Structure formats: C-alpha cells, structure tokens
Image (cartoon, rainbow, N blue to C red):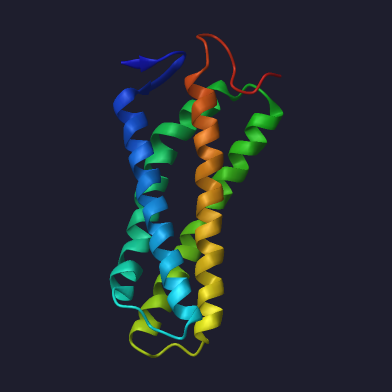
Length: 158
C-alpha cells in the first residue's frame, strides 16, 4: 500500500517508526545512566546499553538512508529541501561516530577503566541522547510532511 504521493509502504513507515521508538527507549536508558553517574554510581546494565548503542543507531540510519531519504529527495523540489537533506545525512555520520565513542566510554566505565569523571560521562550521555531526540523529531516532521504529499507535489515548495 502506497502512502499518498509517496512510494513508501505502510510497512516501511511502521519499520521507521519502530526504529525511532527503539532509539527513544535507548535515550530513556541513557537518561537513567546519567542520573546514576551524577550520584557517583556505576549502574547495573551499563555494558548491555554500551553494546546496543551502535547497532540501534546503525539499524535506524540504514533504514532511513535506504527507504526514507530517497523518497524525500524525490519530493524535495527546492534548494532548501536539498540542503536540509544534506544536513540530516551529515548528522548521521556524526551520530555514528558519537555512538561509537559513547559505547567505548560506557564499556570502559563498566570495567572501571575510564579516566573521565562520572560527571563528564553523564554530560556526554546527555549530549548524545539529546542529539538523537532532536534528530528523530526532525525526521518525524519530515515523514509527516512526506506522508501528506499529494501525488505530483513537492514536500518543500520551490
């Protein structure tokens, strides 16, 4: 089933929403970790979170880049739209690097081999999860815009 003027299927939209939900759940777990770090505690389950950051980010990015972005590019229709898509794509590269660094840092904290203070790690965690939330919000807005496109129209009017 195609969605309005978009060639995205309902299954693809649900899959994208599922990936975003998984990332938002990760953000909640990261928030809990940061709160524990603020109290000077190394929380249980930190290694599990560290292990899942990279795969969760990669799964969402892969789906977005293979299914969502090509559809957005097809309907962008303006310089603004193209620039916005370039920005979102570049954020993926930064997010992947940040996910890797955060994962390594949390794993080091779990092994008690991190030279950073727990307060510094808490700031790092909060910065990452806020960036992920902001990115998801922007993509959800773009998705809604795309799903509301009438056939033969553009997401970003010229």
